[in-house]
Length: 553
Image (cartoon, rainbow, N blue to C red; front, side):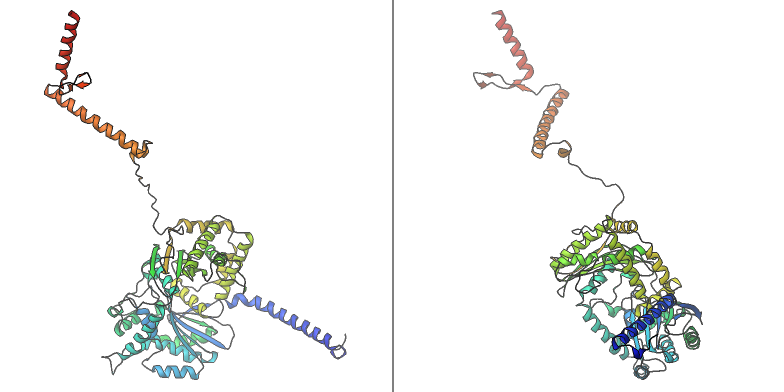
């Protein structure tokens, strides 16, 4: 073989590229073979706490407490938001300032957020600092001070740290027409529970329900071992189990206090809601979707086929909604399946100028009907299946949605979301299954929410989507008599008048017969003049006498 020194510079570069490509190929095969294990969580019960962890062998770790405390479970509006704002504030051992300073010294990040079903307290940090942050999360959910010992009468922590921030978020929400439309769609679809707003609006009467004492009672009902799950990403099971057993002993085993969570099962209703607004325009058309408790792969593929955003910049893309908005300038559309524990909502949301939203919504409904008619090409179906698998795999990689989905799965179904089973079921979606699913949505009851210029935004009936329930019983249809007889209305009036006059005459004759007399009269015409009317009997007798006298003469 030739030595590298004997080769020219161009040949050396070519050999170097070849070696790098072979190394990258070998690494690619290795990564692909280990990918399934990287998506799997190790679940166990440690000191009564449901723990799920997976080790990505990276230098950082994410650790989160996922509690069954979303807005669907709150017994009164605003409690979930209030509990979220109290996260990482003063505890029995640390002040809020100390918590922030210590987290910054360790290079960590603290985050609290909520969804419709979960409240998440999350910490991101270097791998070797897992003992401190495990202790901190346990301390936050079990030892947070919701009232001040020195100034309990004025409750400054609630008014300054919670109420003030809540008003700022409410002011921001008032100008977000997309969020308002999505909240309205949930409200008409589910009413209570999942229908509760993600954030209370400024018109919600929170003073009747939200204060430091109600939040403390809600925390006592929420932060119990039976309602939480501890999820770690980037930590070994051994380390996480060790520190969980040590620090989570102080967490109550069961809920306490007088507050009871709203655990009513979800029921889909559907309907329509229209809200005038000057900040923009947004329209949501929603249907019953797929839950993560009973996953429906056809809905996931349908959402990918509807899509909305192109995968390649400066192109319309293959999705049906991106094609629908091509002729509506300024309109942005997206199709998404919002999965919850016992329900799902497949949404088509369109935002933009009112006229463009109206046109794009009409095209979107046509696209959905085309799927129900089976006119989708085989190529588009293949792309949609691949896109659905990619979305599922991407969501299962390291990130916020991974911790949330794993924790939500554990506290609701007892096990984390299994990505391998999901991908396998998506592979089995066929054109017939997709057609059947789309047809059931079209024939069912939709949830329509419009926010913006209601003079332009369409009603659900205009789009061909019924927002009223379909009564399976036979309906009674009223048919007019003149239509049933095949007559015009004027002809019917003439015939009816003749019948009425005839009936009146018959009534007079019958009454006269009952009295024993005939009131019917006869008037003889002579020389163009009508004679004196006489009873018919007299007229007949006079006529007979006149005829006899005329015959004798």
